[in-house]
Picture 1 (spheres, rainbow over the protein chains, first blue to last red):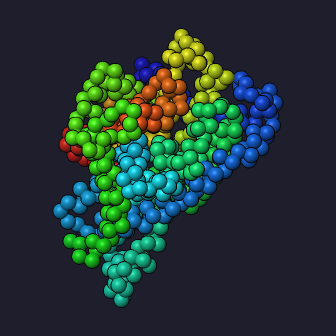
Picture 2: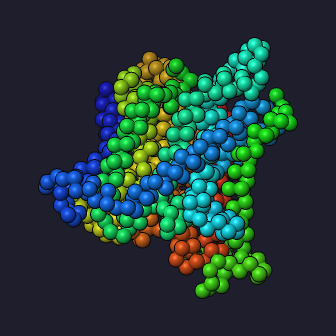
Picture 3: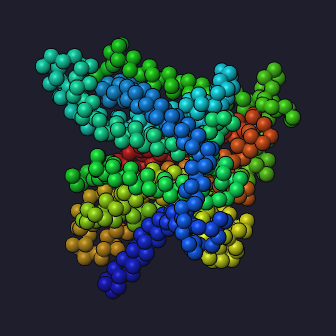
Length: 273
Length: 287
């Protein structure tokens, strides 16, 4: 009886596990295969013959390339600002204890829980009030506020693990507290801060709702350009872009694993180390 | 240690950004939501007295229905996400095989990194009328291009979006349950499935609940999934807000919807997690 229960349970378990993994992977595999379709229209899967012509069409689509350029600029700048501002606030929150500290941390993390359409709409209201009509600046404002909680949280998590006695040792040896932070704490927190910056950049690069509100006809991000194309006419250049994204993501994961280790990003918890 | 006066300077850049790009804009949004809207004119009327009419309008059943649809689909998807994510999280947390663990973590983090637009397009390709999974529509007694299937596609899209996040959250939950407890149960004669359902699951309840709430909050504020997969048939509250804003330029009504969404999101995340923390003090809160 015990045996049978275990067999049934493990079959069910493996079934659920397998379904979940296939559910995540199959659509991506389909889209990557379809991007090599030689047909000029979207026909049934699988494609009868393969070609690279959708990728060639990609290069001729200036909307994508312009969008990519804006996305990269906004993503890098917003991440940079958020890493510095979030990092400074994180140092403060990690270093000092005072009444209301936890409330302050919650306040700094709260942009994470503002629905993205609300972020977009409210930043637009702000820019209308201030007279900012340039899409580029509006996008930058919106992307800074969505990335800020992520860089702050990552830096805070990295700082918590660093012993206070290291700073004290540096100070006994004559360093100012600022120097001690710069030369001792920052190198130790570097991987944590960098992985936070990576997450922030990806978040910004991927954002649709905020950007849809804040773009203007001359300044659009890549995801907004893709959504516009998707709604206007279904063609497989988007599959080609998706396939490139899949490839890039795979590379990013390998790099992340090499640099930080996927295990360290997630951690082992308190019962294994 | 208490902060020194000079140390407060560390908060200046972050505080300015938070005040200027979150608090002030939300204040402006709240103000706009109280303005009167005159049809045919863009935005609210600044010279007229403030009114609650934009909120009252949303009590109309036609609008309340959008909220109901959003919550219903969001709750269903979050529940499905827990069911499918738990086995993944359990395997990742407990397997002795490092390769398997790494593979799962790699897949889940890759999903987080991968563009949502690319994932939604992939779902459109796979479940659409030309896709290999279009047969699933027949299981629901309809065709892949039907309006009824749009709702299934929206659910598939949302599940694809929240499943990796829920799984990563639950890995933390399972890892922080002492494996000795399962071993003890099995040593005392419980089969493995009893050890998991009788020991691990009850201890994971606070983690499961907060994962559910995170997924639910993400689903009901989602915008892109219904925009692309809903084909105009399935509209979430966020889409309603965007339509009010972009198509009929009724900014006050859009702002009122936005404020309600904000209150709901903060209410779920902060209010309900405070309840969880009170019931299970060891569980911690939203990270």
